Amino acid sequence: QSALTQPASVSGSPGQSITISCTGTSSDVGSYNLVSWYQQHPGKAPKLMIYEGSKRPSGVSNRFSGSKSGNTASLTISGLQAEDEADYYCCSYAGSSTPVVFGGGTKLTVL
Amino acid sequence: QVQLVQSGAEVKKPGASVKVSCKASGYTFTSYYMHWVRQAPGQGLEWMGIINPSGGSTSYAQKFQGRVTMTRDTSTSTVYMELSSLRSEDTAVYYCARSVDSSSSDYWGQGTLVTVSS
Figure 1 (cartoon, helix red, strand yellow):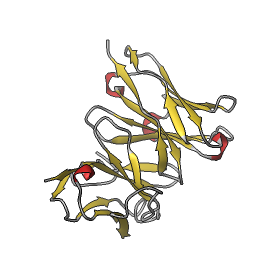
Figure 2 (cartoon, chains in turn brown, blue):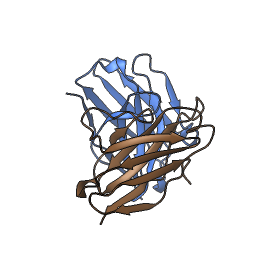
Figure 3 (cartoon, one colour):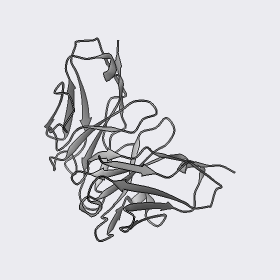
Figure 4 (cartoon, each protein chain N blue to C red):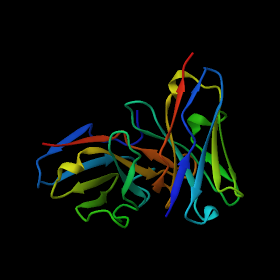
């Protein structure tokens, strides 16, 4: 069982917006503004899409945005495109004893 | 440009150890911590630990305490992850990843498949 809870799958049509949730606890997501999101295509290494809750690395489309409310972080993808179909993982800092925890991953299908 | 190049695939027997390397280039090696993350076939990402290449300090996930050792060689800008007492459940792709902040990583190695089989 993963430390952070994500839906197993989400889907949307091209052009639509989708949101992937990531629920943690007051010991991780709720305590730190250090949630990140990764995109992973089959057979590839993960790619950082969002860090520190809502910041986008250089080169990442502004269609990707991150937010947080309480113990739940969210990744929103607007204007869905076929190439967005991938697995998405959230990640959070969780304190000095176990610094990093991941979510179980969400498979995004673009219909 | 930043590159993390990992060593090649390994096949090990249960009970053995494996040592995976990750050679960094394109940036100041000692300025960024390095994470190790693994992914079992068809499964999610699992954080294993982190090393500070500057001083060599480490922090490991509780699950791997006593079985994992992360080291670095500043002369070659290489970090290493050694996992001992291997079992079939350790079959996975192992990634090194450069740390941006306390938990996120902006550059990842290509991954090293470690297969544990008798």
